[in-house]
Image 1 (cartoon, rainbow, N blue to C red):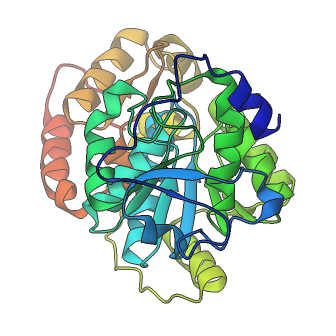
Image 2 (image 1 turned 180 degrees about the vertical axis):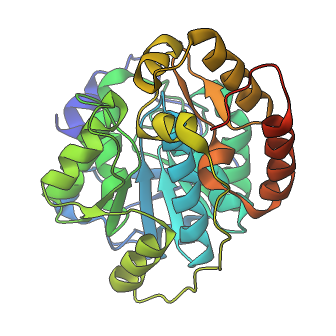
Length: 335
C-alpha cells in the first residue's frame, strides 16, 4: 500500500502534535537523508526522528525476527547484534518484542549504536514494554518513523515501516521466523530492493524455523556460527573483525541435544529418548535450575539463551553445577 494512502487512514485527531525538542525531520536531498533510501524504497518524502540523525548515513545492518521468539532465536539476535556492533555497524531493528529488541540491546551492550524504526510516531513508544530500549536508543542512537508526530500505532502502517527497515541497510539478517509471519514483509522488501539477506537455519521439524529455512532455500546467505557471520560481514562491508577464541561447550547430553534440534513437550521428548517421563522431568528440572533449559508459553522445553550462547563468563559455574548434578543421586538422567 502506498504511504500516501496509509497516511490518509490516520484518524484526524492524530498526526498533528508538535515536534519534540530533540526531534527533527529530513527530506530527500537533505544532507542527512540516508543515501541507501532511494525513491525505489517508496517510503515517502519525510523521515521523522529523535536522537542522532547522522547514524542513518553510517553503515547499517538490519536485524529482524519473530516477536514470539524462542531462546534459539533470541540467542541468534544477540550474537548478530553484538558482532555487528563490534564490527562498527549500526544495528537497525523495529524495536519489537523478541528478536528485534534482543539485537538492539546486544548492540548497545557491546558499545555500539542502534536505530529503531517505529510503527507509530518517533516520539511515541511501541511496544510499551520496551520503553527502556527506546529511551536508550533516543539517547545513544535514534528512533525513526514515517508517521507524523502524535501518531499512534496502527496495523496498516507496519508494512511501509518494514520497507524503511529494509532500505536503511545493505544487509537484512532474519534470525528466526515461522510461516506465514510479518517478518516476510521486511524480507520481501529487502529482496525487492536487491539487498543481501542472511538467515540462520533451524530444525526442519520446528515451526519456529520454517521461515528462515525457506529463505535459505530461496538463496539467502546461511549463517551457521560466529565465524560465518564475521566472514559475511567482512565480504559485504569490507570490515575485518577477528573472532575471539571460544572454549568448547560442555557436554550437553541427549536431552539438550534433542531440544536444540526442536523445542519439545516433556512427554514427546521422553518418547523420543525412550526415557520414563518422571526421570525426564527430574532432568529438565535440574537443567532449568542450572539455567540450561527454559519452558516456553506453549509448554515446550527449549535450551536457554545461556546454553545456546555459551558465554565465557557463564561456563565455569555451569560446569561446576553440571558436575554436581551428574554426581547426585535420585535417579537423575546422566546425559
